[in-house]
Image 1 (tube, rainbow, N blue to C red):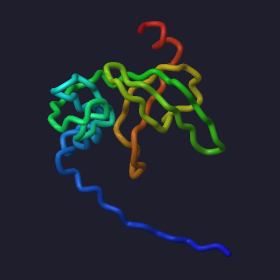
Image 2 (spheres, one colour):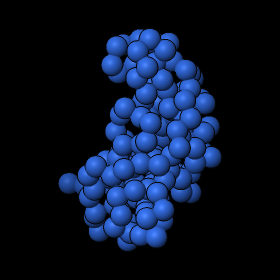
Image 3 (tube, rainbow, N blue to C red):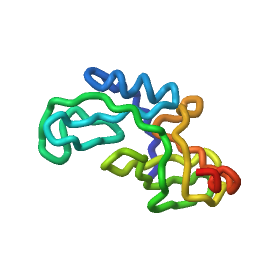
Image 4 (cartoon, rainbow, N blue to C red):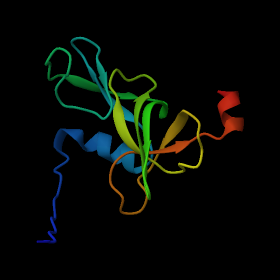
Length: 128
């Protein structure tokens, strides 16, 4: 038996509006806990380390190091750690033909939600 389902879902941005606005521009805006200094990207309203709920915004460079990578038939994804963040993130790889382990956050592609990383080519990797 096969069923097709469609779900329309709207995420209320609320306190995370600055994070989502920056993401649309391809910028990495993390949340930093005022109490303990824990930096989360993707941003959170509550600290994952101490549970505090008082955060400030911290701009990251947007560069990330791949920790694990998976390549499928049509898509490639990776678990990455953005420079300056204490957390890891799952991202889609914009140019999976590159086999480097360094990339930069880019604005979402068309209607594709989520975080997207453009991998550096070998020449760019040497300059970093």
